[in-house]
Image 1 (cartoon, one colour):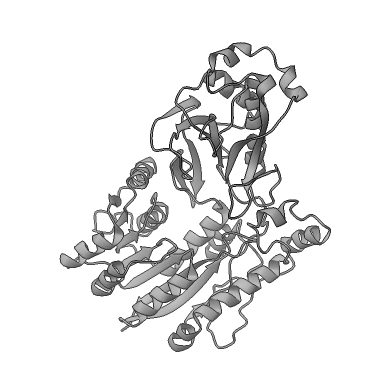
Image 2: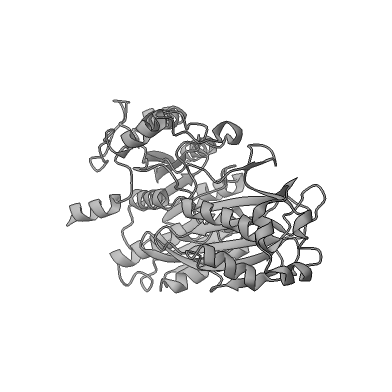
Length: 475
């Protein structure tokens, strides 16, 4: 039975975890052995055959694309080993093989594209569509006559600039989403919808954000517009769905500010469908709306969260804090784990509390808990450091701390409160191992021992590494 569970957990994860090259470091018996002859070989063969991204040099987002994937994993593993070398040696910690992907392409389920005017054109595509002149006449400042219309650019920004690379090809973005991005451009041309011009702050459609549910395949399209008035909006949505029947819902988000921030904080309206999509992650269902935070690589997110829960060694009666909880994903997974181990966990005092300063994320977390029938989790909108200090002031008991801070790492206030509360276990998830190493050093100086490290390749072909550190209170 245990073997079947292990096989189920490993579904979707890489069979290509890099072997630990350091013989002095301990390795637990449960660590999966690497197999460097799996699907990675097919990916590398394709790359060597010349199937590189056609815009790689102009985009620059995939810094490691030309490097064989197995070598990317080896390099990332070595980087983590070097960052934590002292702690590994002094604490006798276990470093597990980096969790890679079987198919490290088209994994980004969220795709964002700007829309901008290009050169003036008398495209045949514009001339052919004449039956929508009513919408053209109605849109006084949002729609222009086709004879005056410029070419519409969409795609991605060149790295470090706001110069658009007009392409529908990307080796890491979801292909359905890319198809919809291009379809939006064609529907804009058909209806004479002006793209937004950053230089003049004029034009109508600024961005499109397409999110695809990994398990559900439901699709959310958010159209970010420079004005609330959207002439022919229903017809626009109907035409887009006709071209892309995969779409579940379309939302208009209004952003009239001259800013680099993509989504507006003002009015939204649903043009088609329910206004949200559902997706499953780690066996739970999550509701995703235009502002929801949701990891863009679901396969690796499941690997990350399952590893984090495993490293927490939950027994079923703990009081847990999920700090920097976002929409509550890891906290809800932990709450369910408590329920599975002890069905009466909530009544016995076992509880997960999630805290995050982003109020909209907390609203989503509460809704997700209710949607999944999880009663032993609550979520609070407050700064994590402030909340930890308040807990310390009340001398509250904390058994396990999950923390997933921003790239800058945890605040000093948060770390000081953590040292005071002294939870039995800390599971530290980080998207920036350098600041994580700094924070781990602080905690090690205050009564903690580094027990285990689990790197995860969340974004193949880039230099980014996600890493988990498990710390235990020293005896």
